[in-house]
Length: 96
Image (spheres, rainbow, N blue to C red):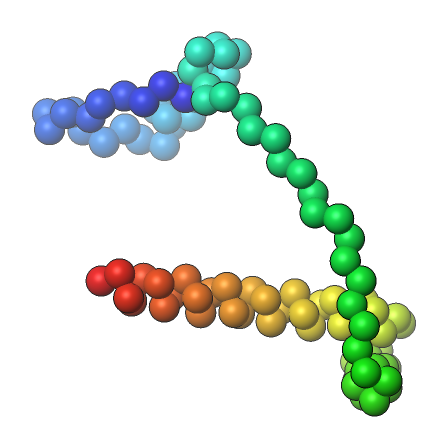
């Protein structure tokens, strides 16, 4: 989208006004930044010690997960989200 300078006398546009502007400029190539290429990272395999795998398998069954790899993926995803959130909060605290 084209950047528009906001002056002190202009009121903040409503969401509907922004939506109309974006829709009107959607087909104008000049209104958009250069396209970026996003590549998905290659799949990575992880290995864990046998004792930890057995404990994870037990917990997956306890949580009625049919496959231990799906349970482990869910747990890792949840933990990564928690860590990212904590990191972002720490950055904000440190910046202020």
